[in-house]
Amino acid sequence: MVLAGGSEQPRDLPIPGRELQGVYFAMDFLRSNTRRIQDEHVPDHEFISATGKHVVVIGGGDTGSDCIGTSTRHGASSITQLEILPKPPEKENKGLTWPDWPNKMRTSSSQEEGCERMWSVATKEFVDDGRGHVRAIKCVKVDWQKDEQGNWRMSEVQGSEFELKADLVTLAMGFVHPVHQGMLDELGVGLDGRGNVKGHTEGPDAYKTSIEGVFSAGDMRRGQSLVVWAIREGRQCARAVDIYLMGTSELPR
Ligand SMILES: Cc1cc2nc3c(=O)[nH]c(=O)nc-3n(C[C@H](O)[C@H](O)[C@H](O)COP(=O)(O)OP(=O)(O)OC[C@H]3O[C@@H](n4cnc5c(N)ncnc54)[C@H](O)[C@@H]3O)c2cc1C
Image (cartoon, rainbow, N blue to C red):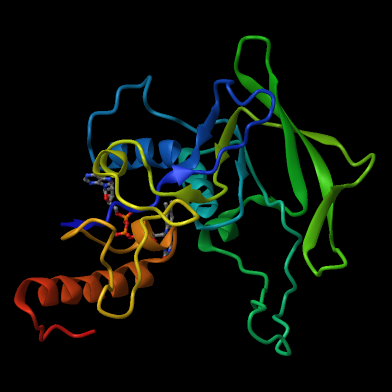
């Protein structure tokens, strides 16, 4: 058996007002849209529409970009994307060496289509419209400085609080690990310190989990990542399974 169920436990934002209507995990918004454009019957009460709404996307990655593109196609009134990290430089610092990552400003095609992007912003509260629906979010600017150990520390900038209109908020702040409830909990498979299925990619135990005859590959093993890594792990895992079953393999590594 190969566990390849992805990494879809979303990072939450447990701040006041989180329970309000109109605040969704990004995947709930994207999934309802995809189901409808694939002609699946999605009843109106399950469909999350951005039409005519002030949309705020919290999180600046690929998932956030997909929320922007979808909101644009729905005909949102405004789209704002908030990123807690500082604005990256226009050009990467070529002098950087491993393990520092050469960070530079990137703009996705969805962002190019139109949205306001804000950096160094933390969200403090979702504001109720009096009927249990979000009407705005309270934000604050943050400052990032390295401490004496060289670790980045975030602090709020005093007096920088501001409010943004919002009647649809999507939480796109990444995924913490695979969903544990269900298959993984029932199997009782070993997890690593980050909550992913524990397993290596090299050596005689490559892609094996803690359970005999059970393998794992892709985001479920490595955590939320990229398609190219999932393809690589899928191929390597297939080879590991072949060796486990047949003793040898002609599949490429
Ligand atoms: C919104 C979004 C945007 C992304 N954009 C990009 C991008 O632009 N470029 C890029 O490279 N990567 C992107 N990624 C990441 C990329 O999608 C993943 O890294 C990749 O799909 C991982 O492949 P996987 O096969 O490991 O898992 P997945 O593609 O997540 O597939 C896992 C599948 O297993 C199913 N599953 C889960 N549990 C069970 C179960 N118990 N029984 C049966 N089936 C189950 C899931 O429903 C899912 O269909 C994005 C991810 C998201 C969420």
